[in-house]
Length: 224
Image 1 (cartoon, helix red, strand yellow):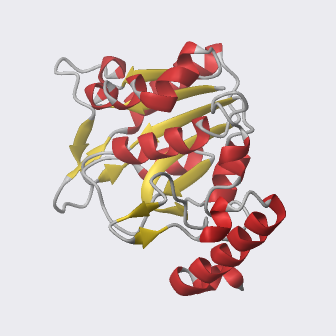
Image 2: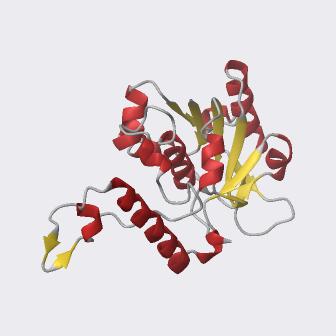
Image 3: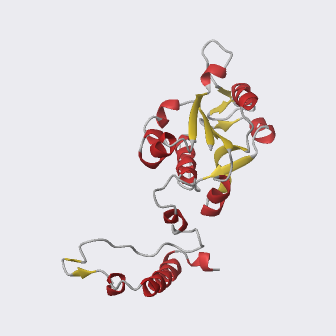
């Protein structure tokens, strides 16, 4: 899988894409993540990528020209399955969406900034818009990293135990059950005895019931 991220703040990604599971996935050659600085695609002297909004109002707007040039440049080299804009008013990210996106071969993630981007970008260049929640961030970079991490871990071969991702919360419309590790007793707090029984069938039944209970308590709408 290849993920191209377009941003005006490429330095933000220095840490997240060089650590943990995302780092291992790249070293294994299972994913290629490329960060593209938008400013070199600006044709003005200051390499600015924003301007005042037509009609007035507070805040600056990202211009269409640098974005179009960057996307066109990338499309000359790579056929993309999706060109995604990270925006608070996009479709809410969920596990089902992550599962589908992880099957793509090549995607672009466009990070917004300032007051927003010229609407013509959204009308003519974008194939999908994604939000990670009903709140506003300073830019789309953190949201793009959330999407990247959520997709990379689903790629076969990334996790040491591929079944781990299949038992995560939301994969089967349930939250994951509680998990425990050693010691079995700590300050008098005991691990459920069924988990120490070695009876796989009984343990699976317990985990399923525990998942249903946790979902009912925390996210009852999932059970609908």
